[in-house]
Length: 68
Image (cartoon, rainbow, N blue to C red):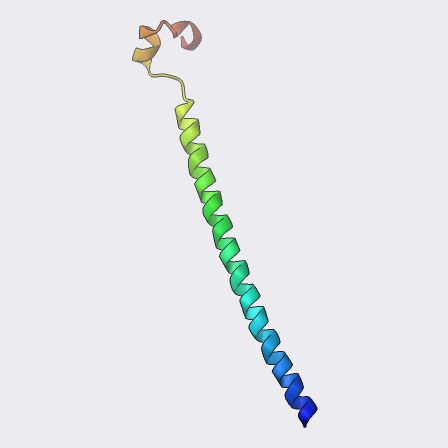
């Protein structure tokens, strides 16, 4: 009977430990998802900054030679 009680206690401790690992993993997954979204936003912002200049700016700066 004592052996069964010890096994039960070990199983309960293992379940608690597993729950802690699962919570830590979920937190890390959420952090990675946040960082991926942030990188995506930054990438989009950078690509918008690198678009060709507007028509008025092209003519004003004589860039029409490149974007004619």
